[in-house]
Length: 261
Image (tube, rainbow, N blue to C red):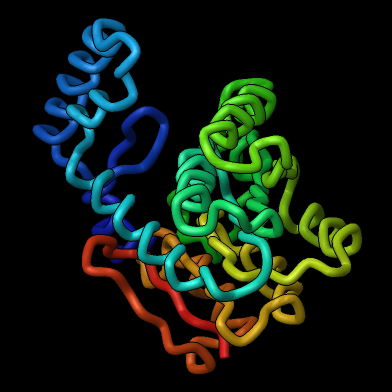
């Protein structure tokens, strides 16, 4: 194990089964806030969803602003939104809500989530040694629960009788290829890459280009991230870093996006 790897790992720890760079104090305060939320949220009555923002941390609020600004960039671009790497489905839920705000009558704007729901199927040497097979898994059968939650979220926007989301379970290296075959008219307006690891990211990037239009958005969650080099390597080996004008948001250190031209 090289010295660079050892130095990088010193800033990482495990919290709830996930890698984090939070300090000990941050994790303690995070747990305190969670305890307050668990104890109080049932007291909020019918306004529980409004008052839960009491527990919204600055980092989460920053991510919501980032996702809103990304969505605004594709309102006039036809096509679906694909998220590769769903886990618990928070981003999918936000996207459904943003669709209801920014383009409530656009029934063609499907939101499609791809995930194994069993964590990483495998890792390779390109992934830097920080993750292992099974990391970032959800509880057994969670995709069925998420399906119901997202269906409920759709009911709070117009045309809720038209289902406008889909969950695809399995390794995206395999399932995305099948999705392309099953959806020959599917244009991709925004693709969000949050799988962290090299192989599925590379496989999807190799397949996705023919379905992009000028104006489509490519969004990366771990680009230029020394802890997860696989995503950057996958982009380098497929589309190429110098073929994209990558941009970042000041609130998100490792996130990057590019408008496909």
